[in-house]
Structures are given as C-alpha cells and as structure tokens.
Image (cartoon, rainbow, N blue to C red; front, side, top):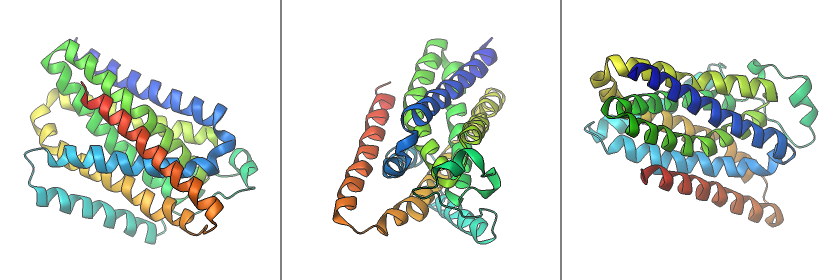
Length: 258
C-alpha cells in the first residue's frame, strides 16, 4: 500500500503542477512570453541558489564533492551544446506564429533541452523525498507531496516560459515537460526499494539539477536581455527578474514551513 501511495502522490504532483503551469502559460500568459522570460530567469536562479544548492550542502555529502558535481553539470551542458546536441534557435518578437506551425522539438534552443534535463534531475529529487516521507508516515507523505507541489507549480511555470521561448510548440512543451516530470515516479519506486542508496545520491542529484537551472538562466536568458540596453526596456526587465525571485522565495518559504 505504501508503494501505491508513493506512485500516486508523484503522479498527481507531476500532473497537477504541469497542468496548472500549462494552463497559466498557454491561456493567460501566451501573449506575454517575451515579457515573462525575465520572470523565468529569476525563478530558475532563485530556485537553484536558495533551494536546491542549500539542500545539497545541508547533507552528509562533502561540500567539495557537491561543488565538483555542479562543475561537472556546467561543463557537461557546455560540451553538449558545443557538440551541437542542443541546436540553438531563439524565439524573438514577431515570430509567435512559428510556435504553433513550424518548430520540431529538435529545433528547440539549448535552454529548452537543458531545462528538461534539469527538470528530470529535479523530479528524481522530489520522487525520493516523497518516497522517504511516506516510508516514515502516511500523513508526513501527504504533507511532503503538498509541499513539493507548492514549489513545483512556479518552477514548472518558469520552464514553460523557457520552452516556448526556445521554440517548442505548446503541445510539445506540455508533453515533454510531463514526460520529464515522470522521473519523479521512477525515483519514488526506486527510493522505496533502495532508499538508503537513493538518499546518499540525493545531494548530487540536487546539485546537478541546480547546475542545469543556473546554466539556462546565465547562458541563455539573461544574456538575451543584456543585449537590450534601452532604459525603458531594462527597468521593467529588472523588475520582472525580481518578481521571479520573489515568487520562488514565497514558494520556498511555503515548502520549508512544512
């Protein structure tokens, strides 16, 4: 029965977070993707720096090992990009019709592919967390699931913005985000059977997830904004980045309250 709870909790967490984020992105925010890219940059950076990295370091893992794991994540994404495994293709203003009519997932920008990798690693961490909570107590498992959901919704919203900005169609963005989130279900099942080993790997999984989010924000999103030097454009962008940081901070506070 505990295994069933773990699988169901991870399935619901993934489906609800992706579904709500997709609804917000597609129905209400679709026409504002260009303006909301700075929000996603703030979300990703704040999630990585204030949640994932502290969680990784607040463990029994050696700090130097966590640092080298993050470095491996940065270098790995950089080398994959240089080897053309992440073909780069930005979406710019005036190109919105391409989102629905033309782009294959393979044409998506490096940010889109990297963010899916980071989401898969993040899902592994969430799956193991939920599994561990349910193994301790069913009520604790439910609380952990709600906490994961609370921070996953803004996290997934940021990812949808990145995917649409990178050239994914709405349908493909939803499908790939849902699939990458299924790593939480797999991790939950694995965590149920080999929790000790999974817990030992959790800090490194968190570090890899953080490196993916930071890489996307610093190499793809923020540089694009830096090229726009008009003060009238820069001030709103700065405000939107700070808004993304604020959203992530509120979600992180809700998570740690449990």
